[in-house]
Image (cartoon, rainbow, N blue to C red; front, top):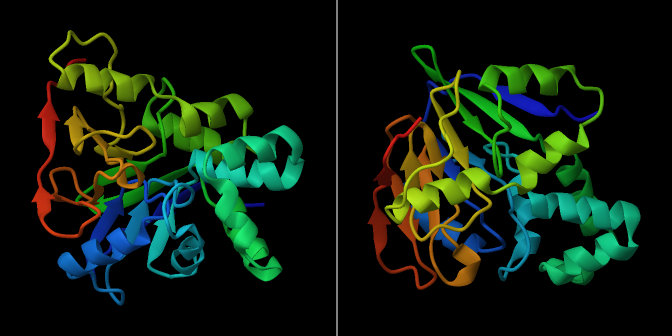
Length: 260
């Protein structure tokens, strides 16, 4: 059975990065990796999930999932693909309505490869940053618990709990909270994650990369004609965003108030 969480040691030989929701826009990722001089022999690229659907080249997800330097958490779109394959019916219809039509153009072997790779994607990733620091990666939202508690639960489970999976893959309450803060509205919900130095999320498209407390939000709407964002996997690292015309790279987080 696949691990529900994966842990990685620090990378003393190279650099670590994390990319927002790709949604089939791999040509934008290619351009970003070139701009940051990504070294496939030494560096690692982590993903917040949603590699597939809606963009032009979802089939290229297989290329990245096979690369030894690429590591992704499961997104809700990968889960929709798995549900469609396992259940058919309404699950297949839901996936088709959310961009899964590209799958019909694949051959049998390509389909099987995608399903098999998606089925072993973890729900969370933890990466050591050195000097005792740690980074977490989940797709959508943390449950109301410290990071270490989530890690312990995932390691102890024989099968994934559906309610916990729903939070990690689908929920948007924390994302909506940081959007309210960006708009200057009063903060209502805590977004900080206890027991970890920084956590990276995707799932909810933002107009720019947002940072609030120790959370970082990296889905910047690549498939919507906006940008794809990639960040250093670090507490205070750099972030780069590139639009579909591949012209100007924008840099920098939008830092928001850290309200408990």
